[in-house]
Image 1: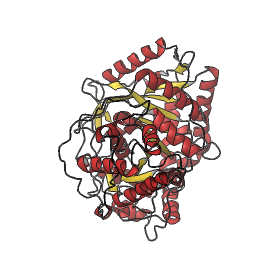
Image 2 (image 1 turned 60 degrees about the horizontal axis):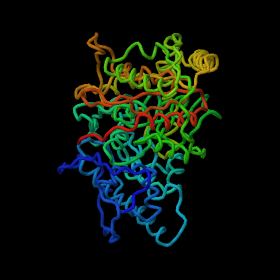
Image 3 (image 1 turned 120 degrees about the vertical axis):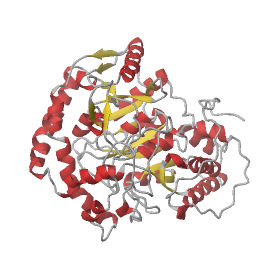
Image 4 (image 1 turned 180 degrees about the horizontal axis):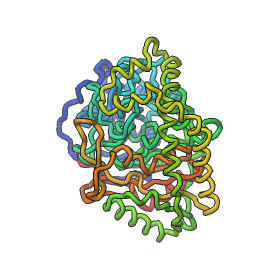
Length: 523
């Protein structure tokens, strides 16, 4: 067998025992009346599970791997690891049918689209017309939108195959994906199943890290792509949102929202290269070449480093040393005023805009008869239920105008000046101040202690570093920096000026070459 040039022969995938499929997964899409392909497999299952998205697309196009064979491998993997609760719905019938169509087109000599045969996972707040879009909340458990989200259409038109809708923190209203809705369940971190996975795009992070897929989509309001990417040892991009108009990189139509000024879909992948591939298809931009690290200038604001777990700090300092040796210069200039402005802006935008954006989404997506009150009354997570009271009461309406028109522009100007005056290519910081913490099965999210200090709010701690850039709409990228002594992933993040998405990916590609990728979890 001839492997693609960049494919590793080493498998990180451990031997699997039989595990039960997670209860509550929508059974209707599990039935499979089709026959398995008789085409001989040229790449074995172990190798398939170690491949990147780019390698998978190339292997399918070259006839080295049947799309159907690969889809079945991933679906079987998802079944075997159902206890991780990565998925809410698996698309067995639809994914196999789509894969067979790709194989038939290749056999007929037809030109294949760019992502032909590539399975993707999709967060369950992104509309899919053939599958439920539940938002991981009981009121929407059986809701089927009238059309796919526009971003998803772009990927499907390029040949991507949806293999399932992934678990998430209910209504994207948290950072743990500890879900109390029985049909969704508590997602578990594949690097330590007693620990949480991050959120709100936790299921996508788990599915990719556990080798149920190479790439997928999440959404990010205040860190919801980058936090689970960091805690599950993969890469994730929050693209530019900017002013929400011409500066927005991705179309947000067809996504269950919280805040139109802050929300965005974001690609997640096992590698930065995989993330760049999805971004290229979605945005229409070319995949960038890896940057030259020598000569780059990374800002290191103290406010992103003053609350950090000791092991995270040790790993991040080692990363800084490695980057310094590669020619990166670190600039220690702070951004102290962003914290105060963020307190006047972040939640004020989200909580008010949710009262407008969620009803508008329900109407546009065909959820006739379901209201914001219906959703609030049936929320399963006690923490989300409590927090959602601020949405239904519109408690921040009186603060919204100043948040949008005064404090957010002031905060954006501070970032813009920071990049320009200090000639900063990217801000460098730990994606999350602490690694994944034990799952709280009682409240879903509670408190954490940093380095043995007093208990502090878990949500505020995990969004601490990702939230400022999210508020002002600048792009952010996370990739793995290493593992703690307990084997838990630590993410390193880059934030850049609005519109610098391609440059961030270019830098991330270079950093990935320098640091490598993490070994697969030993599940």
